[in-house]
Each structure stands twice: as structure tokens, then as C-alpha cells.
Length: 298
Image (spheres, rainbow, N blue to C red):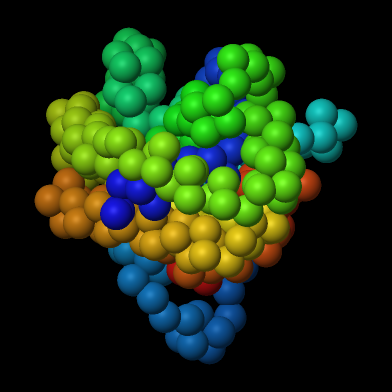
């Protein structure tokens, strides 16, 4: 049953593809007056404690960003750039702890866990960046659901149509379900063969590779997966099913946190899904800030 639900989720969590080159940002933060001590005392949370202890006394911090379009800061509006959460979080940390930092962002639109292992973590430049990093941000997982969607829609609708985009496939499927509600049952049946365990295997391989490359004291921050389905106007039964899938994927992410020494920023429990772009999936600028706040302990 879990596999059925997961493959169903793949149909509804659609996103764009494409890869771009890494973007490096160099930032020098001038000395600033420390935040009000009373306000700091009121703030609590594991992330904040780790931030303070890890960055205390550092002068220069090197950062590598790995992941998908969320980590890249994807914007569906070419005229309006969106700053990714990693840059927002580092600027906030640097202002509080007074250090300089450099970020290199290797995130790619459409990247899934298999692509992370096969395309990103085999790149010599990326490996070198990881080996030099003090902080490593990782966001991956959503596209492990998404990459099944086009072929799944073709099978469900029994069509040879080559969809130009995932968005087009979603539109056709929505229209078909509206005209034939019983198609929901066919969706579940068609998607039951999806290999749920593959995500876990890819996750383990990814963390093994990063662990073999990183410095011993590097701080790894992983974001879990949030639920954008509420914005997609799908039947409530499917909405609940998708959320269950995401919860189970997040359990895998949490499961290996201690073993591989990474920290999970819980954006699933945040309000980021209320601040997405018109596509219903990618965070808008407010959404990216919410992710940054989770990382910084806010």
C-alpha cells in the first residue's frame, strides 16, 4: 500500500528540469553590534545552539550547497530572482557571529538522489569543494517522487503523448480525473510498482560519499521535505496520502542523521508550503526565508 501511495504522490508533485553551473558568492561581513542579550536568551532550539558553538571564533567559513531547485533558488519568473535559503541563512549567521564566508552552490533544477550520486558527487570540482567546506547544505528528495510522473500519466491515460513538461502532464491528468473520478483508482493501481526502497539506498550512498569527502568537523545541514499538495486542488484522500508519503521519506532522512552526523532542518512542520510560487511547489522569497529561519533556529 505504501508503494501505491508513493507513486500516486509522484503524479502530483511535479517540477521543472534543467541543470546550471555552480554559483560562488564571496561575502565579507563587517563588525556589527551584538544582538540584544535578553532577546538572545529567549531564543531556544538545537539549531541555534549548534550554530553558536560551531561558528564561535571563526574568521572565514567556506560553504557548499548541494541539491535541487529548492536549494538553487528556482524562480518561475525570469524577471524576479529568488535568493536561496543558504545565502539568507549564511548572511544571518555571519551578522550574528561576525565572520567572512564564501558559498559555492552546485544545486540543479530537477535533481533527485540518484542524480546527486551519479552526476554531482562524481564531479571533481564538487568533491574538492566538499572536502574544503566548513558547512554543507543539502536539499534533495522531492524529485524522487517527481521523476516517475510523465511515464505514469502516459500509462494511466493509456496515451503515447510525449508531454513537453511535467506541468503539461499534470494539467491533462487533472482534467481527466475531473471527467472521470474513478480514474483515481487507476492512478493508485498503476503506480504501485514504484520502488520506495531506492530512495533509502540512494540516500545512504549519498551520505557515504559525502562522509568520505568532508572534513571531520564539517557541519552538514539537511532540509527535509515539505508538503505543497494543499495548493494543487487534488482530492483530499490523495492529499492525505501524499502527506503520509512525505512523512515516511522524512523518517528515512531522520533515521540516518546520527549515523552520518548531519542536522535536519524541519521545514515539513513549517509554513513554507503556504509561501510557494504559482506552480504550487517551489518556495517564493518568503518561503526561502522560512527555510533559512529554520536553519538558524528561528
